[in-house]
Length: 67
Image (cartoon, rainbow, N blue to C red):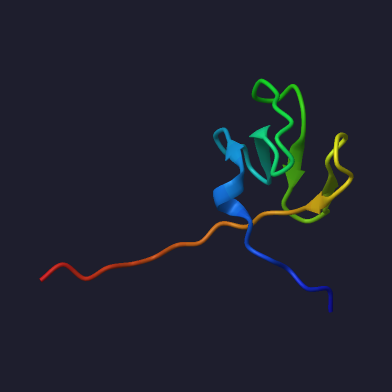
């Protein structure tokens, strides 16, 4: 199994559309307007056209009880 590292704080991104996430700034510093540059696919790693690193994403749900 390939190792995954959480790099979320180093990215900027737009609103989720199904299984796609538009990236507005990569960890390497490359920037794009939403949906015009790198778009991460939930199931298939996407390669940044600037640095060549590969990224994927996932969502998480947290349920809280309010007391």
